[in-house]
Image (cartoon, rainbow, N blue to C red):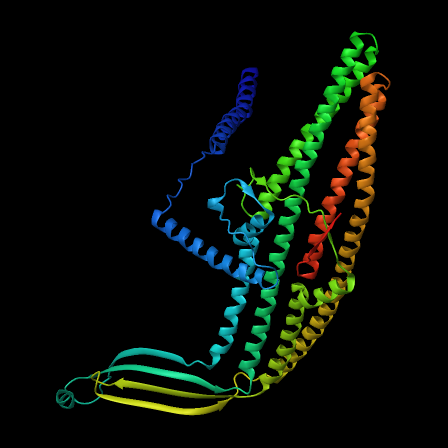
Length: 505
């Protein structure tokens, strides 16, 4: 009995342990398969080889489009601004550029201007699309058919028939032409024309904004060069002071702290010079970006910051802005287009008078017979009075919105002109104060230098005088930079140039 029980117990243990072992082996195998599946092979995609002929053709097309857009942009610029006196071309540059050169290059190369000109061309094509309703619509085609007849007659009658099917050839041509639609097409064309004129003013806005950015970048680069020169002069002054401190320390006239202070001041001046050089490189990159030519970095600027006074008054500037500001004129054209759109929506209730005609030829032979028809018809196309009424309501609401937008634009122009005018006056008044402060700081720096040279002054006095002179220079040139930028801002907000006088600031 015990043997039987032992056998049963061993069999039960084997029964319980075998599935577990089998499961472990199965899961292990499944895990290996999963790991194998998780291995992802990265297949390198083959680069498509460009078609040389296609690339050459695309380059020629883009170059021609750029020339056309550049010529159009120059014409739009010269309508309100003086003719560009620069004849520079990017391929003929010798490393020296004026502000006028940069403006010319920006007008002929900047992508924003090219995009604005192309956008205006899009709206120009819509004028022709509207007038195309009066052009005839021509359709032509040819039809061939073979009709197999179902015979129910006797065999004798079928034998008398030459054939049991008919063949037809039928070429045809037809034309439809709108004669009169009670002004609907004209209203659509006038609306498209106003939209095109508004897009032209938007393009002028883009041009003036690009020119403003070029001026700001050009002036900032000039200021960065001046700033670098100022810090270089400061480094030279502190180097000279360090030599004097060492010389006087060696003969016992100054303490060691003067030498240490001079070395510390020279170190700070060199750090500021490094920052000024980095600022100069960044300003050069910003000028290249504003012109639209990234390679235009290592150039020499011929023009300096303007030091002539601008004689302007607010009333004249506001009157010029109301007559010349492209954004305001664009809003006016959009308001006119919305008004014409109301007229167009109301005329949708009227019918169309059109002419039609067609000619066809054919039969069992291609020249067997011919036929034609022509006439005039008066018809309504998909007349839905409810829809037309709501379209008129929508056009009316759009017109009211355009009127409000135009009034808002007028207020914005007033505020921008006022702000630019006040900023110009502020920078003008600040220039006189900063110029006087510069003269005083220069005199103080000279006196401190002479006192230290003869042993009467100390290093702290010289440092304060030198830093005061440094800050006075930067403050004066910063105010002069603001004056030039504010003048460019006035030209942007009024949409016209301002003239400088012969009076020096």
